[in-house]
Image 1 (cartoon, rainbow, N blue to C red):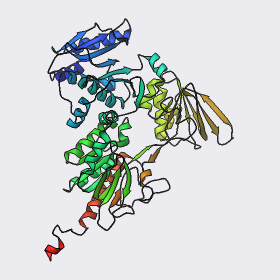
Image 2: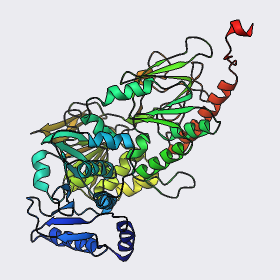
Image 3: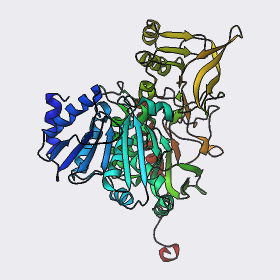
Image 4: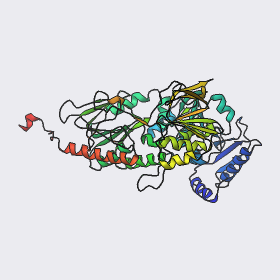
Length: 529
């Protein structure tokens, strides 16, 4: 199963094991079980602290439990965890074997303190780049706390479960048989959902912080660049982000960031965070801003109220809250979200193998999605509102060469239909003739651009008719001491490299603003007189 290079790398990692572990497999006569046996036997030959045991009796076959020697609890993989999940496998082996995770002490303490019965099942696919974070988080929780059980399931091998539970997007997490969440979630997010007092404690901690010189709201490329440029000026910098890395985390391939030949979104986001942390920036993750309160006097403190009730203060603020996927806003979209309506073809495409799907949107993202899906599904129907596809010519040419793709331009999506709790079709109107059509299918991928995350700013900073923050060439907004950068602004061309440049500009402008403010003496006037 493992080639020479992978064996060599894994063997080096397994040297970090501090205690013996056992791989307890539940197998049958299937080809998948034979493949899994080969993988586990390979692993066992690489360390004297790893034992392979095929005496498992779990109902899911093939599957295997990673447990400490002499124990029968741990994390179970009902999968052959290669591809994007090979790292998850390696980490589960190391953590079970006593190697410490690189997780903040407060988070580990919260995991260890969980009380109750938490039986997690997480459905994933090996091509899903959002799945490893969730798999690794739930694996660590099961390894550290016996009250937590985690089973990682590759839907390819358990299609009956996928159909029965209507798993039509991954990662999909069930807790004690009920849907817990879907999509990318961090360890901190999962723990916070289980720890009922987490918000209160976090609000108290945030509210006690001193005022920042520069507070950046948003942790995508713009926010990260702003943080680095500001911190290098030797001033106090904080970043409050709902999800550090922002939308980059959901990007599969990045091939146009100068000096980086090729990477993927999660790795790029991790690199952004690592560089920001290098400069001792105060990163406050999982924090959503609710309200901006301008300074009450020239040179005064700007306030940002957070969703958990805390208020952060700063001498200047940089808004870099980015954007999110735009909804098509037709009947059926919300009702069938994650039940046939999806937004990530790389993540969810494998769930529609051999089925019929539609892609809404004829720009680069929509055409790329259609090309990607055409290699997996039975048929792709692409629906574009405009009278021509807007994607690059090379992509359009590739799309038109595919035999299992139908293209409808000048077509207005009017409804996503369904029955039995899942999608069964898409209705659209021919804008030229007025005729209505219905396409029978099992999945719809929405790829129609972005909407800025600026709803919380209405009534404070000036916004464009599209909801973007109005800025000048230096990132100034209409409010003194408040700057903005990235995809949430009026800057043209929503690209990572442009957002990073805009973040740097905003940071330099904020510093220029700060040094031009009057010096506030720390000596009381009566004493100075």
